[in-house]
Length: 306
Ligand code: 8YV
Image (cartoon, rainbow, N blue to C red; front, side):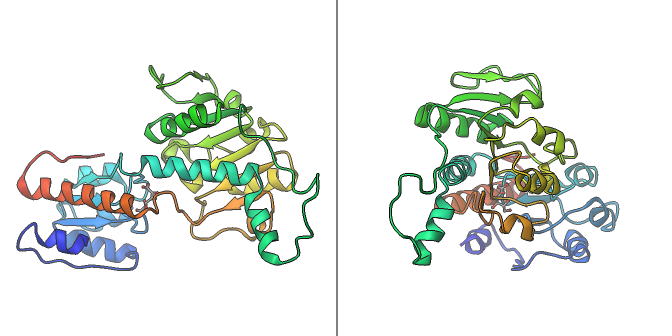
């Protein structure tokens, strides 16, 4: 276990919290512990860090996960606290969940599963539950980082899809045939669009009414990144008015709350943030987080600082 591994680092006082910390608890923890290993539920806001004083005891926040939008990293660094994450460990599993959502949404797999399970299926019919072809279609990846590239690989090599992508900086070698598009609006015109950018102030509501309006009526939107990159109200509106065909979501704007309007739509596939929910992946994430803690306690450069 992570606890046993952590104890092997030396004579340490270890406290294990099983529920997300409140703002006051975050401040207290920053004042009381040299190192904090956290998950996305623990919100290290600027105000929680500032409340810990100019030189809090904490020197390292080791995040268990690649996305660290719940940590005000700049404020932490200014207070002398390093922040690390777990890139690499999450890449393949998160790309897999993107393809799972893409296939489930296009092929109406969740809807079909509900019908099969209901006991009211009346038998095969030539026009029953027609979905959309995936093979050979266009896919846009918004954010061609590690996870974006892993999704592109699956789409291109596995499904013969034409890969297009939007990235804020030029990507010299996407690793496969893929076209970088100059604008987000152009990127929204593919058959499938997958969000794979990190959540930052610049990507908050990146996908709003305007971007959604650029999608074709048969377009399907997938989000495996962070919920607030999409304006959820605008998405519900587009889905309800059927200006887009569907959405596959692993993350939500106000997680774990999922609006009833989304839950009631059959054109939507909803997963409860399963991107990295694989035993081997969670073990590797833990190993990497502990590696950074070991680096810190040995005074070595940190393995994966943000
Ligand atoms: C993690 C994730 O499990 O790595 C990420 O960014 O979103 C996850 O799937 C989560 O961050 C736990 O902290």
